[in-house]
Every structure is written in structure tokens, then in C-alpha cells.
Image 1 (spheres, rainbow, N blue to C red):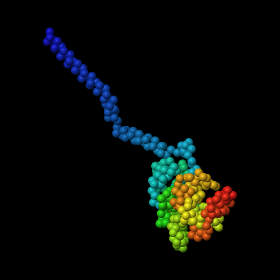
Image 2 (image 1 turned 90 degrees about the vertical axis):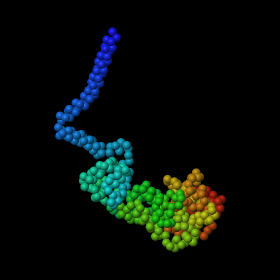
Image 3 (image 1 turned 45 degrees about the horizontal axis):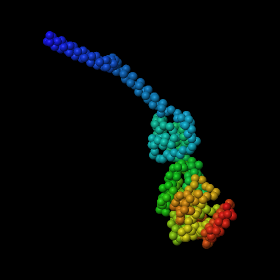
Image 4 (image 1 turned 180 degrees about the vertical axis):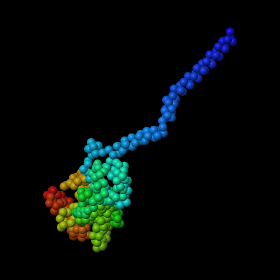
Length: 381
């Protein structure tokens, strides 16, 4: 009885083992069946058919990519309320590649796609034919419009006048209005522009070029670079600052930088020629007495827009340029002075005034003491 039970159990185990094996085989077949079917299907297809289908798929991908690249971006820009009237200055230098030009146009928002621009240029044979120059575009222009400008290379003479007392910011604005430069690019270049030793930028100076861009009327080609314009104006200053003037500055223990800083204050504080030597004398005497210059021009230099009158709160502005809070000269010039202001510092009046106040017509009134000065302020302001 026990032997029979053992045999039956053995047969049952073998049957179960065979059943499990068959189940595993069935599961494998079910999993592999789709792949086997695909294998059989592809085996029946001709290589030519497979190549045709693959080519069609790649073509569709290419078409979709081209649609995305060449889609007209203008509706998107309008929807985003972008300023399409803002002038964008693009400088194309000799030797620049199409890729470099396209990347510059794209990064500044003139065109939507650098790749599209390069593709059109290659297909139409424009590579190597784009002319150097400074061009003015607006955001979202069509590639056709951009190509028309750069391929034609419109170059012309531009005349501009920089009045005495203009700051670097005002010069940047004027050049921008004449489509010669980009404002921000000009200011960035002016920060460190110092081709002459006397222009070496002291600590805290906002623009190394400030004070040394001579006020004059200039004529330049429209493709002049920012550096070329700066070199032209600084070169004119260097030429106008004669050996005699440099010698007088040395006699007064004034560096060229200090001379022009003082002259810039005189230029901004004075409206009438007869007042220049007197105001220059007052500033020189205050420096000698280690007395704050208290020049409103240094405060105005720190403001976004000029004010008719500075306030008490303005005199508390924290800045090395604030001559109400700091004795001595400001870090650098606050404008670009003309020859008359420079000559006034080199040849000051022989007076002992310490104070001055301008009336509403720009005429200065002078005094020896602070009490006299306050009376004049109440009278004329």
C-alpha cells in the first residue's frame, strides 16, 4: 500500500513538472509571437520597399523641421507686444562669416532663426557678398529685408555736432539718433576707453572717456565703428590741448585729469563767458582750503535727468561724485568741456570770492561769506 502511494506521488510530480514546462513555453511563445510575426513580415518585404518607407519617414521629419525653422515669427512678436519700432544697430565687420552675422542678428532679435538665414544665404549664393558697415534694423524684420540692406551696403557721410558740456550719455544718445551707434554699446566702450596716459581710469570713475571727447562738429562715414568714433574725438582733444596749456597745468600742480575735471565743473556751472574765470577761481580756492566744492553739477551727473534745482535730499546722495559730502575733486570729469572752460581753470580771475549762486537767467552772483551767500540765495532763487 505504501509502495503504491509512493509510485502515484512520483507520477503526479512528473505530470506537474511537464505541465509547468509547457506553461512556460506557452508564455514565451505569446511574448515572442508579435516579434516573430514582424520578423516574418519584414522577411517578405523587398529591400527596395523598406528603403522607400524609411526615406518617406525621414522626409516627413525634415519637412516638419523646416516648417518650424522657417515659420514667420512676426505674429508671435506682435502677440507678445514686443517693440518692433526700436532701432537695433548691427555692426558687420570685414571678414565676418555668414554664421557670425546670422548669430548677431538672431541674438539681437532682428531675425527669428540664425539657421534659416544661413540656409538662404548658402542656397542663394550670398555667402561672402555681405558688405561691412553699421546697419540699423528693427525687431522681427524679414530675412529678405535684412539681406537687401547688407548686400547693398548703403554707406554715406554723417555729420554730427557735440556741444560743450555734453556728457558721455548725451553723446551716446546723439549718435544713436543719427543711426551711428547703439547707445549701450557706446557706453560700454566709453567705460574703459583710455588711449592716452592722462586718461587712465582712477577708482570710481564711471566712464574713462568722460571729459576727453572734444566738443566739435565731425563728419564720419556711416560704417565707422564705436572705437573709431571714440578715437576721433579723443584724438581731437589731444590735439587741442596744446603744450602751453599742459605746461600751465603743471605749474599749478594740476594733472591733465584734474585740469579737465575742474574744467568740466566750470563748463556745467556757468552759462556766460565772463563768469568762467571767477567760478574757476572759487573752485581752486576751495580746494586750497580743503573746503567741499559743493558743486550742483556733480549731483546732476548722478541723476537720470537734469533738475532745475537740487534739493537737500539730493546733497545726501551716497557717491564719490557728491562734492557736498566729499572734499576735493570728484573721481573724474562730469562732462566734456570746451577750450574756454579749460582756459578759465588755467587763467582764473584774481578774486577772493568763496560762494556763488545763479539767478533764473543764468547770471552768477558772488559773495565772500556764507551769510552773504544765503542772502543772495533768498534773493535770486
